[in-house]
Image (cartoon, rainbow, N blue to C red; front, side, top):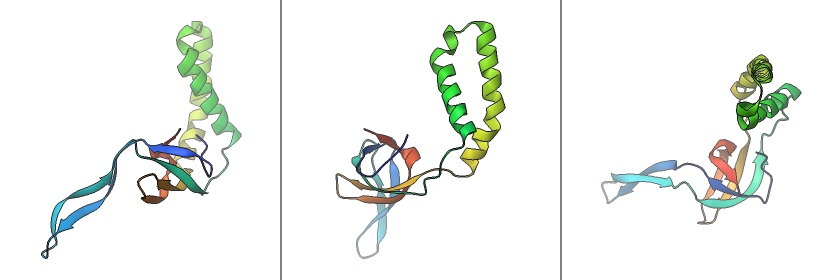
Length: 124
């Protein structure tokens, strides 16, 4: 998914913010979080690095396999699986490098998430 400024997004999971405290003793009374399905607008995109050709090819072949692999002849499916397996080390290295985009999102409820990873957002 490519995020860009002005794009509407939705949280895909709950995000824990911190403890909720009350009273003079500052006793912990709960935990504050932003719920999944909260929506907002991307204000800024940080740290976006271009993907290598191998990573893009892995993504393309993996999507092809997931969508149509069950309909392919056995020999074609096996060849596709071998091509995916050959590209998988590049994909794993790409993920380990932390090539995740972080963004600043202003949620509709007024909260601002800064430096949030794109992995917890989905574009609308």
